[in-house]
Image (cartoon, rainbow, N blue to C red; front, side):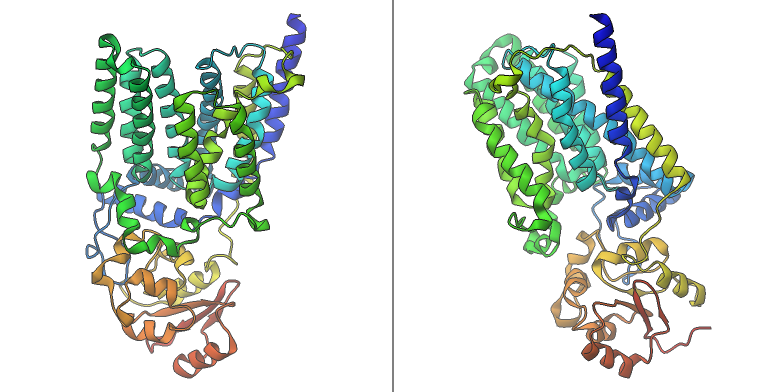
Amino acid sequence: MKIRFAAAAVIAALVLSVIVFLMPPSESYNDPDTFWHIEVGKSMLEAGKVPHTAIHTFYGDDKLPYVPHEVGFQAVIALLYDAFGWAGTYLLTAACMILLVLGLYRMMLVSRKELGLPSRGREPILMLLLLPVMWGIYDIYFTTRPQMISAFLIVWFFVFLREFQIKPAARYMVLLPLISLLIANFHSGVWPVIIVFMGMALLESLVTRKLLNRRIGWRWLVVAVTVIGAGFLNAAGPKSIFFILTVTHGNFNLLINEWKAIQFNSMGNLAATCMLLAFVALLPFSIHKRFFRFIFMMGIFFLGVSNYKYHFFMWLFVLYFAAAVIESVPGLRRFRLSLSVKPLIIGLVLGLGVNVIYNFQHTPQPNSYKYPVKEMDYILEHFQGPARPKVMTLYGSSGYVMFRGGDVLADGRQDPFITDATKTVFGWTAFEQSMYGFPVYVTDLVDANHPDYVIVTRKNASSRFYTTWLSKYGSPIYSGDYGSVFQVNGKKPT
């Protein structure tokens, strides 16, 4: 029998390692926010202080207010990039993936435990449930952004919160505030989510009368106070943890695709649609008449259908419900094969380890068709001046321009660029100009903001607008994979 279990463990580890190895590292490098995160992190480390104003903008440094709500992530990613280049950033991806997957597995065990369901013998099935979710999260959401860190922190906060509900041990009174502190400093924009989770747990304890128990109630009070208090211990204070109120002011966030409602009838959102259908199918078999599971399901369902950004929570917590459904499947009721968590850990480490080695040998570079790579090469080679060149281009590629050495009209930091101080042409803020300006109002934006160069993509260069640009600025000084570079300050390149 021991041989059988050992063979199963080896096979499980090997299969998992192969699956993980096949997850492409190149997906980590395809997010426009990564570039400005690295640049802000480098600037912060060089200055030795947390930035409270935007850098590298048309308006000059120290002019526009910036809420430093992701300083922990920016410092880490800047250090990794400085030490190892692009390959180094994947080290963070691999580490976050391991911690997230282990958290998801632990969450499934907790889900079963709070229902009184044994997990021994069910481990292989739980691991199989984990595989498609792990792949989906990695493929869809694990670009190099703060959500990589906040994802595993939120999952582990939830795990410890549920374990505290089962047994209010003293260690959770330390772990829960600690995670709150980490989230507030690495990705404080999602910090309110853990407060909502904790509020649901408190409500559950009130309904079950645990909160009224003298031996337990004071522990809940300590946890609630310390978790909330820890969230305020960050570089920007309340502005940071309530950053969502800043970006949703005036519905500016709705101009960005990831904040828009998901079109579930689109083939481009097939993975999101499949996840939604799977989530809904699980619900009748996973609530088990438990108050917390019901209200938690309502919350996750609301987030899951809201937009692309919040849909991520459905991927993170679908396994909490799926873990309880095994008992409702006739063919699986009698299945028993005990496995420890070791095959899962070994498989993850082996697969991601090989990915890391491969990634250092064949590191993907920024896509020159998606970002103005060659165009910025040309500008930086020919630009003369003590300052950085002012380069105006699309919102989605401005972060790359800023990372390479240009000043920008607006980029993914968003909050500095929705202020009244940035309003110029048409009464638009810099963010609105960047979103609305291409290609129709390019000449108006140039007249109002006086950039040195304008980079327009091929899809922006329709014959009508292209003719106007030619008549006003002359022929492009350079054309690359991404688009064309117009020099608009009257100087000729050397």
